[in-house]
Image 1 (cartoon, rainbow, N blue to C red):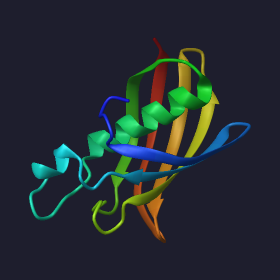
Image 2: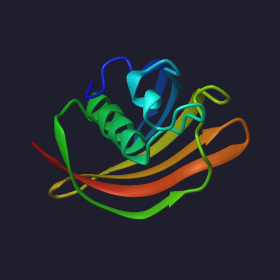
Image 3: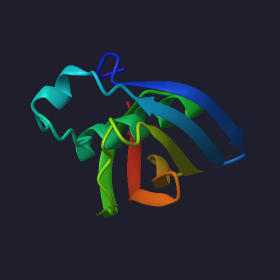
Image 4: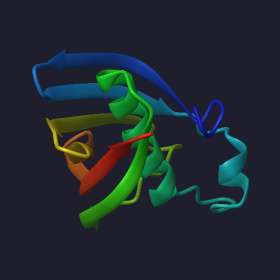
Length: 121
């Protein structure tokens, strides 16, 4: 885990190339003291790191981000108000590694959508 204690994985269900992860963001993590004091916002780069780490756990390999596209941050993830997230990952094997289509939601709100290509380290 790149950011120690940033989130906890509550549940991970994998069926063929589809995975659903339930996580909880740690509202007391140090990063929120600077991003932003009094109004914490989960950094997008941290969400992208979580997607990478979950994909690594699912495929059982260390990965490196090669490219990302269609990145859409659609709602602010405030860990004090909505710490529980659901990440849906559609993982496809490619010649170089894996292509992942992600949708991250809290309650009935879509917070993030992106497509990422990972290479195997």
